[in-house]
Image (cartoon, rainbow, N blue to C red; front, side, top):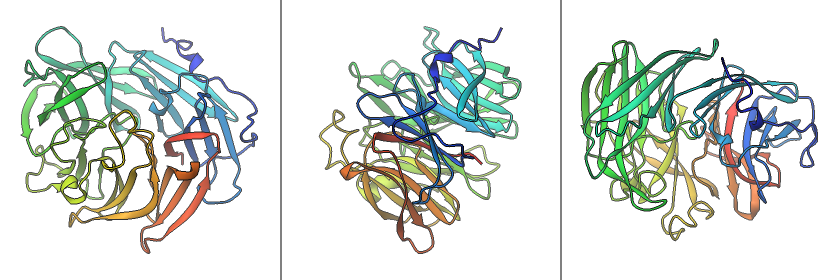
Length: 399
């Protein structure tokens, strides 16, 4: 029996808000905001990203502060895959209420990566803790219309070793009857610390039989992808080629001697292109996290500035993050003249192919969406977010 009430405490709606009056709107965008002074995280819905008095509706959330960024939006529904409770839940915005529709209890936790097989089927991959030396991943295919698990199986991944025995499952892609999984291994170095080995692995698996067909080793960088329910690290371009980022810097892989880089797996190919690599760290002298496609062979990355933070203790709170435009054909990287941003792991970039819209928590406590004209490269102001905002951690297009 599906547990409709299992996580109903996650979303409690208040019909009015001191920050923004409730208005009946037909939203095009939704933001997930962390608010100041430990106030509840909230969702903010708006009709437009332009700097105007467009109607907005803010709905506070009563659940824990650090979880709500994990929602997934698809075709009119919101989903949440909780690593803490191992529950997959489905919600819908109905008027000014966020309604829980259904939920599924899964067997595993530690979900790191997802991919949509099609509009109705979500593929989610987690670590499987068995106590054995052989590293295992657990895959679920969930039909989100019926809210049923229609495929579930274990993937055995070799190359675990005694020093680096924990697996990071960073990226998953499905093309035809092949499942492609990018992963690496890490170890703990203290209560909160960790470091990643110097090798990435790409596994090709038959999706029907789960037979492991091939493993490709990558030594040019490590820690592929990341927790992509929170932040994007990959995309497919107009030709269907799959681009992705490795993240070995302090915020994710924590092996900063290796470079952040962008790689490519061409459409129809099982192996990653060994002749393609954009070495981000070599170009800009810093690590980067987050990769968003703008169209026409251009992408945006979000990079740290190592001269602005002391260590990981103040990494999140320092205004240090820049945004850069990457030409995927030439490898050229240029700075976008935006205010410095703060906070890690954000899904805060969206493009309509004319503008890139970037939500920034900037200096002087200004929380705003900025518009970057992709043709003229001019910057202009977009919607200003509530003054009670601390971090803007998600921005999703609803239409």
